[in-house]
Image (tube, rainbow, N blue to C red; front, side, top):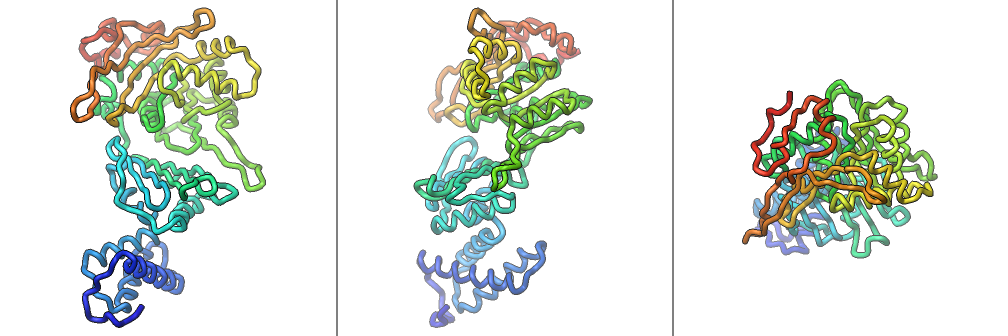
Length: 439
């Protein structure tokens, strides 16, 4: 750095600030390599090295600019660069990097452009490497996509060129620090007290339940909350691609898929874990999400004594969820007639809970639907509760009502056997909330 500007206030433009940032970063990296401070002292050492290196430039930046540069360099060296403040923001639930210059976040259910950017593609790639390499994953031209889980449970997906045409893409779905409960969903308007009581009864009565919904609709959050209704004395096996479930019970065995090694061996997928779980004496099998042939193994487990299983899948309506299950069962490679597949589904699944993200960003349980059996070649679905939209307010907020349909499910005797006396008034519009209905 030249000393020609010593003693005067620096008026640096964007390119000059980039040069200064690059120079300070190089100096700090060199000093860190020489000093090799312990892990718990790295943050303190970086600040000292930054101050020392900045003083050598003889520049006099204003306090705000200097603090901003120091913060950005620290985030680059210790965190995840420009997106670190977004990850630290409790209101941000998802961070999306579409190349170096386009960063978006989801905040309170709405997408918005973030006021940060990367220097170039290489900068994004360095941050991606910093995320995935400690997790034992790699991403490069030969392996251009990666799914991973951060130590705090956040889910990460990265896609790099040549697959990503406009530069490296990074998506991080943050893991909520606070554990939500059913009372929170009622408070948020995602469901009513009556719906919550009904779902609690269904879980405790060992019904097989599928939670259906689109991407980002809150399926995993709902699965977490519904899993909390499982009694403490039962043995639970959870199976996930990336562990997100946080069950409160003590007797839980958590299983997570494993990607193959570089030679293509050593992998374990959801289907293999579902099959293995049957040999683990589970009272409940909870699968984070079914996406393929494991749906057949899951249905067979539900049909062979493993009642009370829970899982999620991607679909926009309960009827779509059935079609999706049919497709996934056929992906298992078994040449089964479609009627046999539907019979498997109808006999295995008791309830479909549809979780939706509305146009205003709100997340709601829009349908609770019973799988009521077969009629000819068709699976019969009966809506027990549904969300009836009445309009959209001037501010874009969706208006409507969560209400029962007036139809009682066929499995009422199973709920009664589990200790829940749900009177007919629970299923009638305008009924009083029935939190005290349990024996």
